[in-house]
Image (cartoon, one colour):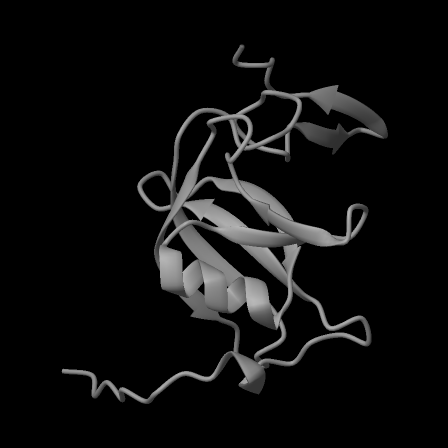
Length: 125
């Protein structure tokens, strides 16, 4: 049996970039599908852990962005994981509706195959 260590977590222990941001990949907790990537800062990490509602930092609006607050396509946090370098986050989420602002299940709906782009999924709505 593998030994598990439990330590207290301090969101300031993460490695943020020069703008104070860290990338966060959202993954569906049941299917394992990668849904999207967005940025967080120390405060949005803390808000996410406090509320269970995944909260990002919008670089364009310079404001917090609670996923689904206006669209209803909510992400509820199931588990938050850190990579080994502590410079990237993985949020396992329960996703309601599409994760992408284009109304697709995932933001990763375009593949590059044989030198051409191929759309993999249509909008859900």
